[in-house]
Image: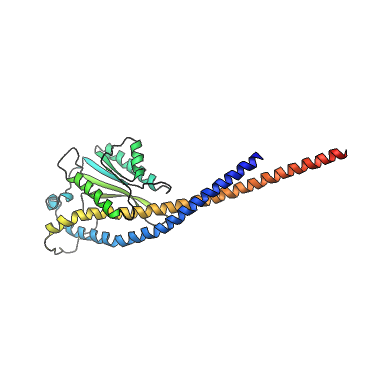
Length: 295
């Protein structure tokens, strides 16, 4: 009978867990629609900003980009800033671990190539992971983005990255800034991606077919738009990361709920078999005792 009691307790515990995972899945489903809407609303602005920057930068000779704007300067890379964008919480499948592993591989590759790599951790999961491995992140940590904090957090991270890129202090200055984040492809698919933030480049696409006309002039526009473009890149990545995190959590909780249901079914079947066996044993004992009394 002790075994039956143990099975009953296990079934009750798993049923309670299933209620929690099902509720978390429903919450994630409600949040996912808002996150997708925010991502879709922000995407046209980001794409148009990228097109404008391509038009502005494509017409500048690479040797003159430093003079055009400090954030466009391409110089020999001796020090790299890697920004890892994760979540503050777990229970979202491989969302955090994928970025942490990708970041660790990139850190190792940069150091093997003879460059110094420093880390900025966004989200408690990246902070905890790399603190365990002894990475120095002093002054370079930020909370994970949420729907309402993407804009301000993006500005803060962009400000820190731009300051490290343009500082005159050679012991702190970085020559390249890279962002690693989860790109939202669909509810079932989130891809870890690497995005170079600085130096800001025109990309691999073709430049404009003819020289655009700028008002008041290219230099004045660059002075204002280049920092805004860096902020926009980070914010776009954050909108993707927020949607990807919620989607990953919904899928993980759906899977956990299904697994709990399967386990409950298996344990219930085992419980019924044990109970049937116990009843049969008791009946046989009663019948045996009755036959013994007759004899």
